[in-house]
Picture 1 (cartoon, rainbow, N blue to C red):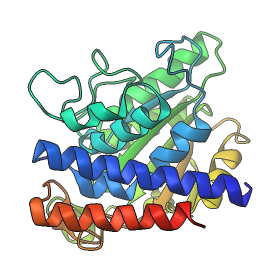
Picture 2 (cartoon, helix red, strand yellow):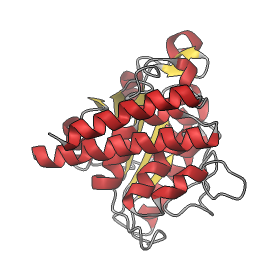
Picture 3 (cartoon, one colour):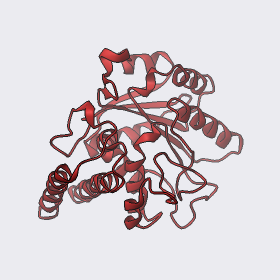
Picture 4 (cartoon, helix red, strand yellow):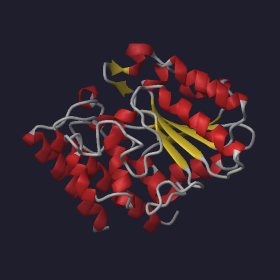
Length: 281
């Protein structure tokens, strides 16, 4: 990746973060913390990795993405909007009555959404089914799924992982957003899923650990995943919940609430300053 490409991705990640804050503020509800921690991943997926066509969201040969931690829809919506699936201005309709951008992704309403998700643990099972179905159809498309580290406390996640390994789904890549916090606090205190990478290896996954805010590492991980044959890949990314907004970082309280007017002004100013700095580099 060239320095120019990296800078463009960093700028876009900042815009995705602005979309997250703007939309949840407009809705007066939503889940900013885990959306912000995955901003680089959302950005890279839709700007570089996924073979998709905004003009034809139902293209049969497209790559699929399943947001298993469906509550972080604000991050997905921002990435989709900046990829051209729908107008960026529509982000401000998040969770409004009659808006197609509801609190969790709806595949029947939102262009670019491949699976309706929200009940934690279920998205990865759908992704496994998609990967198996694409194999049966002889298609070369890949399936990606993003999970939360609190979400993997669900038993269904591990049943899905066992199935993915059993069927050797090398067209499947799951991503764990390991920001260390969930709605009730530190994941170690609630129900520790550690060691995450070792468990995935034991379940038959090729496993890669990265800094989820580093585009070079994200790019290298996806490149490596494409070389793996006969087994699925898991990318465990270490991230900071609330990344990019000072008072939200590493604060579990921002898992599922929106800013008040004063907080919004601070968050918006910080992100605008970050964007201006990036654009001026």
